[in-house]
Length: 371
Image (cartoon, rainbow, N blue to C red; front, side, top):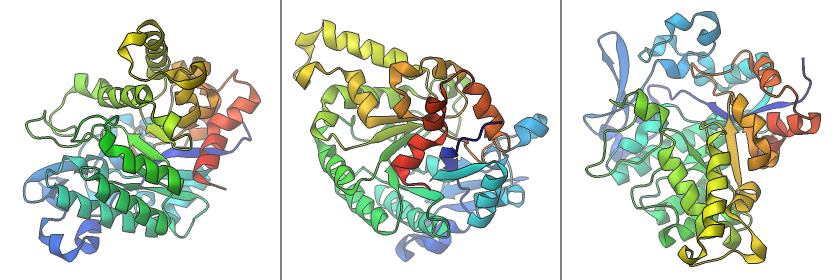
């Protein structure tokens, strides 16, 4: 059994059923996200009939090992793992799993980007960010929460990013697909400036495409296995746009990462980007200084949160060992809990010890200031 430190770059909470009704700005209370018992299961709604997050598999950590046949999408709050909603129970489960610290993402919140109303979405995020800051507060060196940002209005997003820093959060989430164009648009420049100035890493988590008028049905409602399997498309689209734009040449201290898409997609994408950049120079309005390539900026400014990607680990040199951060995905059904160390030991078998230390925890601990 290994003795290197495990730090999860992708852990989650489970939003309590009264989170938004208790914490949202009073003027939005009648439109706030709330739980409805539908038949035998609990379902989240907001703003009348906007349906989003499903309770079940988001809180069934451990079942994949002990009773995989009991995993189901639907569920009720009576069965939610206490560590999803209580920080003390969360840390006890971390201790059981030999995990020193974790970066905290939402669960139901991942799909709140489907709410069309932008002003309501901002209120939803403010309430969540306040609750999350309180959740992490008892263990500031072990639990590092990421704020949710509404970037429909970049000014609003920047304002909330600054507030998130003030209340003790460690970074922020932006959607894998924003409502207005790609992230290479000049409109996002104030966000990059603020994130760099505040030393607040930004993360794109799987399943976070923003609602858009006339768009396809939102993830989590009626998409099937094909869409689920290929849901990294919007993320790769924006990663490509960011790297080609020269963003990191202008903002060398900015850090942007992607969570829960695993690793193996990245070596091919970076190889393809480098070849296009070298072979079709006439298509690029901007050429990087000192012969740099898109993959160089990925290695210096981006990070990859993964869970169990054995294939990706074999190709780690193509993305840079310093970009890789293991994550447990606790308390979701696909989580490595409570066998995280056993699983990490297996997927890192044959990796040099100094690289194991970085991938298993040190890269994440350094970026998010986890002891």
